[in-house]
Length: 144
Image (cartoon, rainbow, N blue to C red; front, side):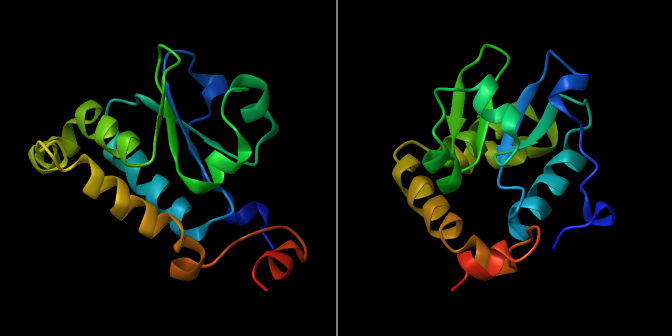
């Protein structure tokens, strides 16, 4: 049951053509909290945000499948390259100066598979961590 008062006020890709687009699960409370934090860390306004449930995602990024988007966040950079999951986090750590302190640990040689595994563990439990926010009774169907 989302209402207009619960709407997240984030930069929209339609308002900034030359930005990286973060595609996230807009029905996931955990994900919504993370993109709000990410937006606050983006001091130079390089990022825009789009819920994977927005019809524009399929129109703009036909190569990204719904099932893949439900499994991990994606960042589509200005060149059109899609970075998913832990690779998206690593990409963002290089793009946003406030995340630069995390670069040495996120990019430590030989740790990519560990970060991928950790990201997957959190992603598949995201609804249990903070719940789901959807219109009408659709949540009750998904959370049975």
